Length: 167
Image 1 (cartoon, helix red, strand yellow):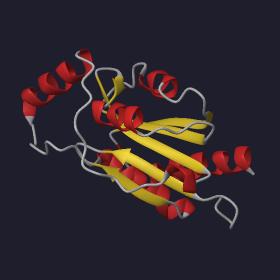
Image 2 (spheres, one colour; image 1 turned 135 degrees about the vertical axis):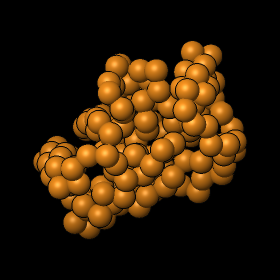
Image 3 (cartoon, one colour; image 1 turned 30 degrees about the vertical axis):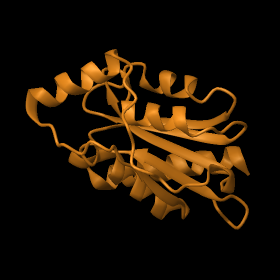
């Protein structure tokens, strides 16, 4: 991919580092620009409190404040978006980014990272991208805790499938 014709950005939110790991692996595979979404509230929650806090954000449809992110969506041909799964949905930080960053008519792809089940996260992710072409989707179960060679192969295969669809 990106053989001089497709300019690609990976925009992701990562709470525990899983989506960051995947985003960086995608970057190295397809030579994409990578942008990390950061919330204004960077307090690190842990243990059971993390799940209660995150679940409450999802169920209350929270759109947390974000730190400024200097990405010009219009400069890219393909936008790959990644987020962790919280209560069967993309993390609220990604929802906040998508609600505040207008783009339409783009080729997009989505990935999510989860610790046991993606639920309807990919379907909800794609619904947030109405008006765009969804070129691919994939989920990763605990990528930071798994076999790095298997992860690399999965990302390579997915990137290759995007290449076939987009060329």
